[in-house]
Amino acid sequence: SASDMLVKVKAVFNDNGWKEAWCNEESLKGLLNHAGIVVKKSEDGIGPMKISVTSCEFLVARLGSIMMSSQQLSGRKLYSYPDVHIVIAFTSQIVPDIKQALSGISEKYAGRMPSMVSMVTGPSRTADIEKTLVMGAHGPKEVYVFLADDIT
Image (cartoon, rainbow, N blue to C red; front, side, top):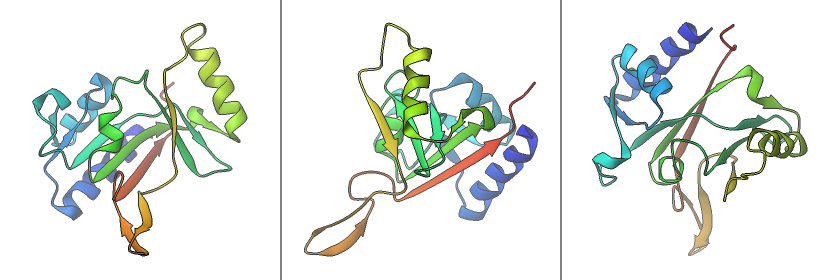
């Protein structure tokens, strides 16, 4: 349930000593505030942005990936800039493959496709820097996905 998920989100914040998160989505802000997490908006400045909380378009089961788009209220900054990206998702957003995810995007935004659709498949990593594995070089070092059953 959503309340169980909220308990788990709060536990991750407590375990890591995190006190605040950046979030632009009103529905998620209410959940975070209820959990006692200070919520900031990206307009407050991205310099100190360490943790972001966003929704997603779909979770692609076969790839173990998160589909994001530029049409989301979070904007692109909130899932590419912070060190930690937390995604709040619901079971109705799970699709088997990328084909169904793209069909879902096409259906959802009929006639006004997002200018960008992106797949998040885990924390950023690269070995391009002196052939050494570097985490967080091009995006978050950590990605968390919290899943709840849809509220009926």
